[in-house]
Image (cartoon, rainbow, N blue to C red):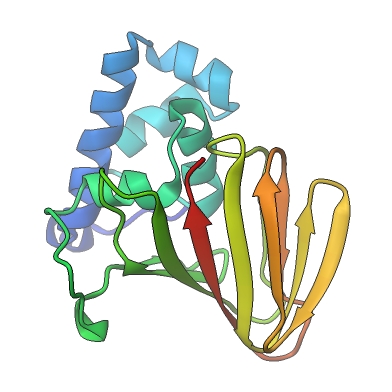
Amino acid sequence: MRTPGPEEAESDPVTARLAERLAELRTDQGWSLDELARRTGVSRSTLSRLERAEISPTAALLGRLCTAYGRTMSRLLAEVEAEPPQLVRADEQAVWRDEAAGFTRRAVSPPHAGLRGEVVEGVLRAGADIAYQEAPVPGLEQHVWVLDGELELTVGSATHRLRAGDCLRFRLWGPTRFHNPGPEPVRYAVLVVMP
């Protein structure tokens, strides 16, 4: 997890809105910071700093929080954005980066409360390795289509090596791991369908 500088924290409205939304979700559940820490395995101090927008979350941390709140990462990020339009130009698509993990996530089709599907683009730098401990929403359907490079994707206990053009379809019930074993970045699309 990285700590933004004072100028960066003030100039990043998405981080501020995300922090506010995470605090609202915890309050809506009636959970203390200690209870959320117990449910996620994330320290109370980290959660507190996150909710005050003093730090920017990593992909793994957001994954843990999404699991606790029963949301996909896309849905959580969409909740801090304005109502999505029907057409989103490439230069207007929301991009989120976890520089420390080497992960970039683009919301190609922002989720809408009344719709079940969405498209997300992911880019992992060479050697990047991101693990999610459990499904944010049990039974979530995903299609992972590799556009460039090579991706090692572990779903549950099965590991699949995907190359450009390959697509893996699965329902998500447990842990997943996205790893880029190659010397080049890997770019892939994830099609998500809520159960």
